Length: 393
Ligand code: ADP
Image: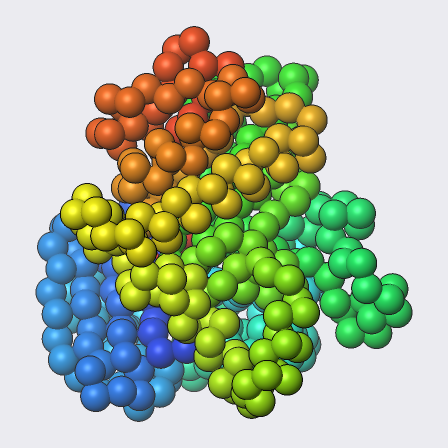
């Protein structure tokens, strides 16, 4: 049975059709339960709950985010963790877009809610589900403090020469068109772990490049704990080739396609967001599958992986220049933590920077994958965005 003296923090990450949640003991920050509602509003909807390293799955229909949040709360009681919801002291939400307004975790008030809502114009796919999650929690726990932690916030330190596009300046002033950057919660978290691992004196300069490679991917240049540039831009479509997103390209391609193919904006959006990237190049967004095919000499799979590795190396090279030096490269997230062949290929470009990979350590996904003699340390670190949010509540 739960202990009434015990208090908890709940972290929610609401996507367009999913809700991920984690419950942490408030004092120790031990994660006691993790849950995932997948397929909100769809027939395939189900709830997966992880407790004591074991997942259980239940089918149920969640019409909307409120339903999903109610089910999530229920799972906390069903698992005998909570006796009452009053044991939850704070709820943290991952909010993708904080614009230029939010640079810190922010307690959600009606005014803050309004601002997050107004930022939906910049993140139409991402901010509305976060708002739905916040409103659902407000219905169930009206008095509990809710805190928004923004994925853009870590990048607020990027200087103007890096965040502006070469467009009429007035478009920045009028419409906020600039680079915002995303995955900030993860980049901040793993760069902090790397700083600890490097164990440098505070006074020394410290340059780290963090590569968050998952379904969505981005690379960030971090100087003395602050983001100075990042590969995603005005939206999370920019930068690296991703699972299904194109990444950077000549913007004229869009205009050319509109003229040649007469696509609607919705069709074009679908192509760029869902049908491009690794999937568009080789038919699958899953790097595991592509690697299996590459081992069987599938040309398209080899090409897609080579293209991704090349771009990872290119951003690292560019950011080594932006940082004017480089102490460490960090690989994280699903691909970064597992795809040793991509790390190997990307690092094969970087010998001139002083990167020497330890093939055995890399193959085993160990924490340190560079040789002791490597001028630049290369690390594989597990990212944990829920924990990073809990730490900030
Ligand atoms: P998200 O961005 O949705 O949080 P993840 O960080 O979990 O995603 O990354 C998901 C991707 O990581 C998958 O699409 C897959 O390509 C890749 N991935 C996961 N596990 C492995 C693995 N063992 N080997 C190679 N790639 C993997």
